[in-house]
Length: 153
Image (cartoon, rainbow, N blue to C red; front, side):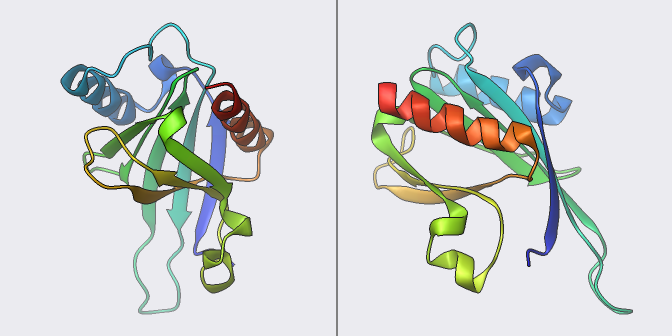
């Protein structure tokens, strides 16, 4: 099973953890990503905790992530607690989304979330990313809303 215990909650962009919200706002301003403000279809935040293993194992690590879906965009941020998160975005028409549990990677590294593949904002070549999600209803709603938004983009 996954090394991380993930908990996902639905929220608003303004109620994201402050470091996530600030990083996303700065990214939007710098990259002129449009329609993020008023047309949010869903926003969620996930806290992932990697537990210490064994007597000499790594210390507990917390990773914060947040994702916003609008009718045209997906924007997401993630980083270790205390660090500045990295932020990515993509037009929905430029990406594909797959449930991570249905990918070939799941057999090697079991986890929960979505795999995002395609052309990201300001990228010259396509890339692939993982957005980790918990098992809560908010995580399932995020998957559903994202896929519906992509179908309508």
